[in-house]
Length: 236
Image 1 (cartoon, rainbow, N blue to C red):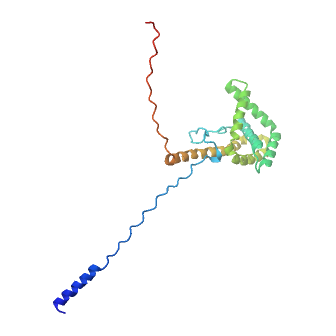
Image 2: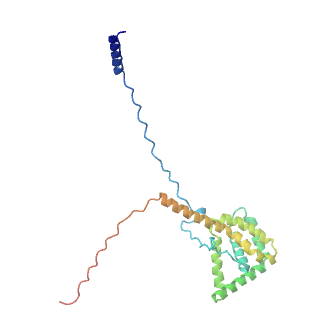
Image 3: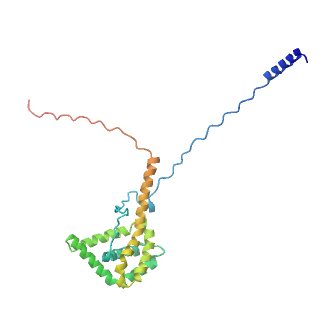
C-alpha cells in the first residue's frame, strides 16, 4: 500500500470514529434517604408513682434517710409491728392467708412485748417533747402507716412482710426486741429500692427533656406604664 492509500484509509477511519455515538454518562446516584430521628418515649416513674413524688434526703453515706433507718431497741420492735399491721390489713396477694395468720399469732404470742415497747415509745416521745407522749405517739403512728402503705412499693413490701411475719411469729418473746432492728431494715428495703428507682427516673427524665423536649416559647415581658399622678384635691 502506497503512502496515498494509507492516508486515505486513515482518513476514513477517523471519519468513522467521529461518527460513532459517544458513550452515555451513567445517571447520578439517587440522593441518600432522609435521616429518620426516632424519639423514644419519655421515661415514666417506677411503680406508677406520682410525677411529683417527694424523696427523703440522703445521709452523708449517700443512702436515703427513711423513717426506719437506724432505729433500735423497743422503738424498732414497735415500728416493725406497725409495718406488719399495715401489711396484714392491705396485702391481698398469694401471701395474704399466711401473712394474716402469722400477724395474728404475733399479737397473741408477743402481747407483753408489744405493750411494753409501746409504753417505752410513749415515754421517750413525751420526754423529748415535754408532754405525756400520747399525741406524739399517735402522730408518729399515722406517719408510719402512711409510709408503709406507699402504693409503688407495695408488691415487694407485701412479699417481704410475709417473710418477716413468719420469722417474728416463731421467735421466742425474749428475742423479738433484739432481732427487731434487722427485721425492720429488711422490711424497709422495698421502700429504699423504690426511692432509688425514682431517683434514677428523675435523672433519665431530665436527660430526655434536655435532648428531645420542645423548648418553651419566649414571650416578651409586658412594658410597664408609668403610674399617673393622682388628681389634686386642693382648692384653687
